[in-house]
Image 1 (cartoon, rainbow, N blue to C red):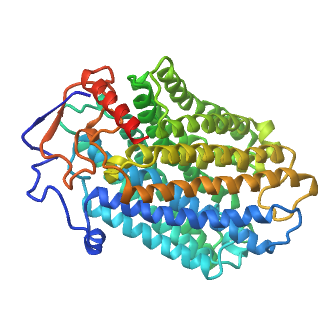
Image 2 (cartoon, rainbow, N blue to C red; image 1 turned 120 degrees about the vertical axis):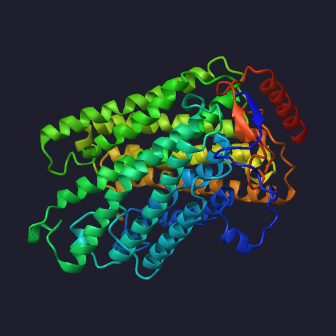
Length: 557
C-alpha cells in the first residue's frame, strides 16, 4: 500500500497539540475515549473472564476422569458447564476480537484519528462490565444449570437456578456488542483516509464490517428471546411452555436464528486476522483479494439461513430439514474460498515462521478439521446419529475455541509490538504456539471418537468403556492450560523487559505500520493518502522493511 501525507482534513482532522497522551492515571483510563485504551480495557476484562471460564472447564474435565460422578453432584456439574459456556461464549469468544483488536486497529488501518463515536465506545465497555458483574453475581450466588443455550421449558419453568439474573447479564452484554458494531459500520463508511477505496481496505476491516452487520441484525433477536424467557418465568405466560399453550420449538428457532450467526461473529474476525498474517509472513500479495472480501459478506448473509440444522431431531418438518441441510453445505463454500486463497498465497511464498505465522498455520489445521466435521453435521443421516453427543462438543470447540483463540493469539502477537511498543521473547512464544496446538488436539480430538461411539454430552457419569478417551481429553486440557498461561507470563514480562519495538517490526504493509509503536493518542499527525493497492509486498519499501525486520530478529535471538 503506497501512502503519502497531506495537511490534516476531513474525518481524520488535525492532530491536537497533545498529540501524545502521557497521562497514565487510573482516572484517565476509566474516562478515556481513546479507542486504543478502550481496547486494552477490553483485553484485561475479557482475559480475566476467560480464565474464570477455564477454571469451570477444568473442573468439568476433572469430573470426567472417572465414569462415576464422584467429584461433584449432577446439579453442580450442570452449573459448571453452564458457567463455562456462558462466560466463554458471551463474554469472551464473541467480543474478544472485535472489542480488542477491532477497537485498536480499525481507526489505524483506515487512517482515522478515532472511531466515529468515541464516547459510545467507552460506554460499550462499561455496559460489558455491567453485564459481566450481573452474570458473575448470578453464578456465585447459586449459579444457573440450563446450559448456555437456556433451552425451554426447563429454563422458563422448571429450573430452580438463577436463570433470570443470568439472562439479564447476557442481555446487557448484547447492547455492548450492538454499540461496537454500530461504531465500526459508521467509522468504516465515513472515516476512511483519502484514496482508501473499498477494494483497498485491509481484509481485517472487511471481516469486521461483515461481523458488525451480523451483530446489528442478530443480537436484538436473542435479546428479545431472553426477555420472553424471563416473562414466561415471572408471569407464567404461555410462550414456550406447552402445558399452557406455548411452543418450545419457537424458542429454538429464535435462539438459533441468532446463535448460529454468532459462530460467524467469532470466526469472521479470526479469518480477517489470518488474511493479514498469511500475506505478511508469506511476503506475497494475497491471492484473490476481492474473493476473500466478498466471501466475508457471503458468510454473513448465509449465516442467517442455516439455523435449522441445529433442530434436525427437534421435530421440525423433514422438508425444512432438507432445505437447511442443503444451505448448510452451501455456507461452506465462502469459507472454502478463503482457505484455498490462503493456501495459494502460501504457495511459493518466502515463508517466515515467526510466532504469528505459527498461530496462523495452527488455525488452518484446526479450522479444516472443524469445518469438515461441520459438513458431517449438515448431513441429516449422520447428524441424527451424533446429535447431542461429544462429537458436537468437539466440532464446536474446533471452530469456536481452537480456530478463534489461535487466530486471536496470532493477531495479538502480530500487533503486540504496535500495541505496547515492546517485543516479546520469540522462543517462548513459539513454544507456546506449539504447546497450545498439541494440547488442543489432545483435548478435543478424542471427543470426536467418544461422541461417535455414543457418549452423550452434559452427562457427569458415563459408561466405563468411554473412560480411556475421557482420560486423554482431560490430560490434554492440562497441556492446553499450560499453553494458555505461557503467553500471559511472557507478554506481561515483555512490558517491563522487552526490547523497544520499531514502527514496523515485521516489514508489513498497511497504515498502522506507518506510525510509531505504540501509536500516539491521535494516531496520525497528518492525514495519510493511499495511492496504491493493499498488501504490495513487492514494493521496494516493503522489501527493505522486511530485511530490517529479519536482521533485528536475528539480533534478538
